[in-house]
Length: 352
Image 1 (cartoon, rainbow, N blue to C red):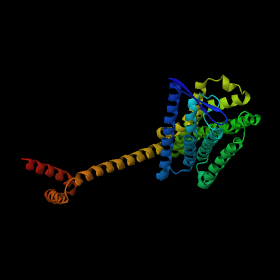
Image 2: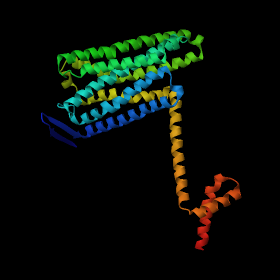
Image 3: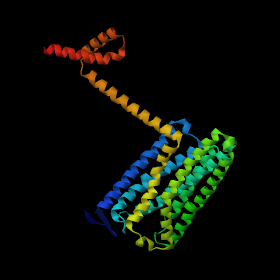
Image 4: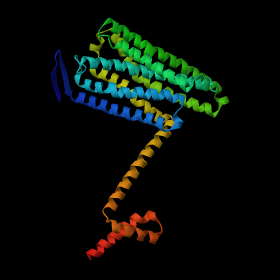
């Protein structure tokens, strides 16, 4: 199946290409969007519901989850529509919406990596200065750090918005963004984690059990950063190529570029999964939440069925059977079963 549709607007024509590959791509993006929302909303609900998760380190993880939710709500739906264009110009979007989408990618991507830098800094203080950690990083300071990194991300968003896609200013902005939002934060995280593990090897035996818990938390965050690098590094490489060579986009195959963009969005889906499998506190919180949801649903179902059974009895018959069953058994919990049994006996007797 390979159909092309041309939609005419006031100023241009928009091409839609409907084929099996594009449909499969759109379905993949839709599933990815739903999984991202479900996973990250679950993280936020657990943080709000269970007080043991309200640590300063998890403040930054929640900020990261918020950025991932914004990816699913603002960026992925537009990317889903673009799947049917084969990335050919003009894209099936109004010019303003296309600009908003590309600017939002910069916003949420920058916010994600800066949150990871903040988390690595928090782990650095927790391990290198365990006794004065609470003095260095209070909850108010953590909130200020989160606000500052979001303001920085919004600043890049505001600078990007008025730039034309193929202008010299846009090429310069892309290079600056790669350095500010990827290379410099990456170098900072590498240095911080190198220092963390150096201190960990030297002090693990002296600090003991609590220190081992911090090391495990650091490994969790390192896994998150590793997933971020795998998912985002190809995208930043492509951005750098486009900045120095405008013809690079035409030379890149469409499936390759789509795969690179999928990797970028896949990171937003992976983060809550990483917490679930590697962080004991989050894993316990997820289990508690799902158990409470399942128990609530079971209680509702059983109560609904009991109400339906009692509804089919007359008021007088129900009162009579209830009093009889209570006097015979002395346990009100068995009343419902005896009511049904005696009702069946009466119906059989009347038929005879």
